[in-house]
Image 1 (tube, rainbow, N blue to C red):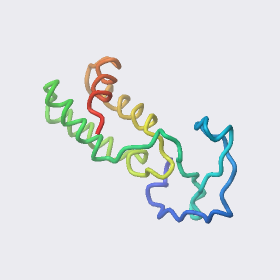
Image 2 (cartoon, rainbow, N blue to C red):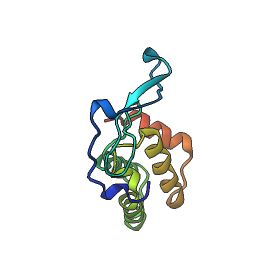
Image 3 (cartoon, rainbow, N blue to C red):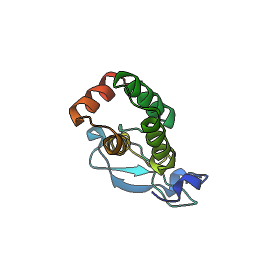
Image 4 (cartoon, helix red, strand yellow):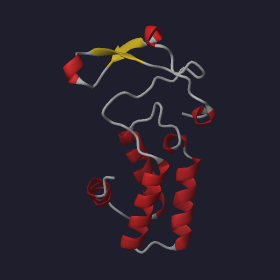
Length: 126
């Protein structure tokens, strides 16, 4: 996803959409997808929508309070989230990919099991 954060996405017109597989069973196996005229990225039109970077920072704040994180841990995690394109460019990102990235970042700095993190993200849906 490198470099997409800087793209000012310009969506193609209806006539230029491309047929691609879909995860929505009600439409069948393929559906027309819009894409960016500038970078070529296909827009995520699935139900697995990404969250804003604010959602993940709020979740980090909740986790830091609940698990008594040190300020340095919180800052390192926040910096890595801010530096990751997947949290900035919601055009083609998936929420599940953001969650995996978030959990991976957390595991670098704190000792929590995936079950703990999964339960936190499930309970704290915004």
